[in-house]
Image (cartoon, rainbow, N blue to C red):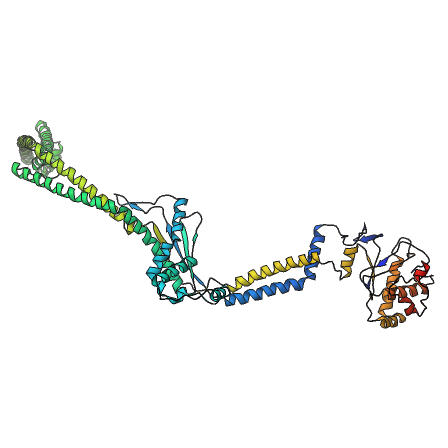
Length: 611
């Protein structure tokens, strides 16, 4: 189709309902003029917003694929989870020290040795060893439990085992049953060391909650018993040797004590303690008593000298005497009365003479009482001196006895030292024997149960909620990944936006699809129809598509037959003709021309003749 003026042509590409501007023109996108691109190029810049929008477009386009894959994965996972046999996990927590706590002589306990990764790793391997499983099987008699030896249930994965592995007859061979039970224990037990500590969680999984609790408890008991057995074996030789030596020393100690006792009886030596004899104890007691008597003698001597040399009654020993104090009080009263009456009467007055005589009598009594007190102090001093002299004589006598005893006790002390030496060695060996005996027993165990196993109340697997959540996440991830893969492999254009991104051209108009040619002709005959209005809008857009207005030549093409090329060409020709433009319509479809039939013209001469 060629109007009056000719400019670079525009084409209709890929969709019959969309008309795009040619890639040779510049297109305005988001207010910025950008050059057109060929097929498959993107016009937008590679910024974050455009990338996110592109991702959202792909996900929105493939949303049913993503949701269907996610829901399908959840459905399959849910069914598989519901078909699986519920398993219960019982856990027991152990503390493993490098060495057991050791008792000391003072009754305190020395803590266990420090942290050792190699030691703990060794213990973990022992915990997972076959010997532990065999101990558990033997203690719980699991080899005779048919439900324990058979598969756990007809789960999705267990069904394969049941179908392809023959069922094993139980009870025909006890040894084989125990080996199978040990393998079951090894397959279902696990250990989880707590990082940075000597704690380890021992777990066992079983379809039966009580049996899971029994087996994991038996595993812990078997490990503790194994440690105790090893310590018993390590200390067996030491215990035997020490026991023999202790018996020999006991006999030697008894013989030496008997020799010492016979010698003491023969020499009449009596020892009150392990360090001193009776004579030595008596001498020590006499020396102590002599010291006390000397102190008492010195005290009484000083008091006697003070009283003997005193000329007045102002000494404390005299003033504190009740008789002297009473006499002094009466004398003071008489002296006071005499002085008062002296103002009235003369000294030779009979009453005054009587008072004076009373004072003289009291003075005589005071003199007599003081002399008596002095005599008593003298007697006390003499008695203390005599006791001191007697005690000194006794001490000297005891000294002679002790010296004689020491001369006779030389041999006794030799025998006593031998007894003490034998007793010390015997006590040491006996203590060591007890320590070795304890070290090989339960008291020296280095494994402790921190938290005992409990019967699990809910299954540990399968967890339907977690399985559905994981399957949903996996399904969404797989669906999104598949959507992006399909989008990358798919080069089909289905929308106007995809056409614009693929061609780099701007859409000028959108024409609705007609059912057939007759329907399209009928709608074009009606100027108010949607099809006529769409072509008028397209014609208007073409008039503003270039800087100089309507292009001189316009080419209509499509990706396949029957997509509306002829209808669009005829409609646009009629529209531009109605505007008074001279239009030349050329049918360039050499294989299947149809314009002449639509317009009712002859087809005796065509484009090939003109060319």
